[in-house]
Image (cartoon, rainbow, N blue to C red; front, top):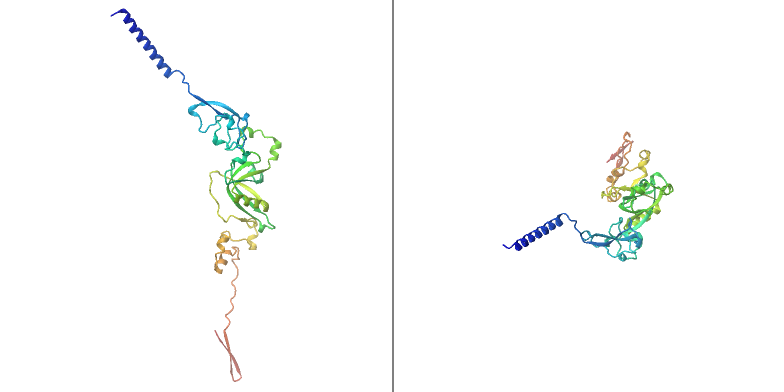
Length: 310
């Protein structure tokens, strides 16, 4: 064989081996370059209800495969819109996290359709000593003092209600922010306002209760969906130790008023509404003999006799 041909074959084999070696190295060791896209992200931590400005937004590059659904690519499409949910720094801003129209104002855009926001004044005692935070679940208690102990009452008028904000705070403060509290701010926080999300019917009921007595909030487990019975009214008799002796306190197992209204038998009514503290050692009453129905005067000579007939 010609020497030139042998050299050409050896050279081709060497080049092929070099190309194969480079291809294997590139596919296993060389860094892979992924395609990236730019999306609009938050330039700082922002809470729900924040109106977005130019300074609140920035463009960040993320891998195309990690691009969120409905991400916003142009900052102009997000300016002047209101956040429906809180976002963190560098978190992409999506269409689902902002209002659909630029005319919504502040937290009003976060109120669910069919709901209303109504505020109630609370203190440390009526607001569970500051443990109630935005997005907490509470029950609303109404208390009417009345002119005497017997007229005082308390009952639960609303259950499983969402707290929208405490004062102007719409999000739970971080641990770092909670550790640096201004003493003057803490002193003012003893009396504040809780904003609740209610239906129009519930809002009207709460507004009436606010003007007729005192309102208190009871914090509940957010996973607890239980409800209490209709007969949840507690009267002042439970706090009066002398109510039993006076006979003014009703039996604790007394049915609700709607059940009592259906009782027609007087004996059954008296049995249910009788006080439990009736004297147990009361002497038996003496029964009078039955009076005769008919009396006949009988005269026998100078004798006069009366005959009775039942």
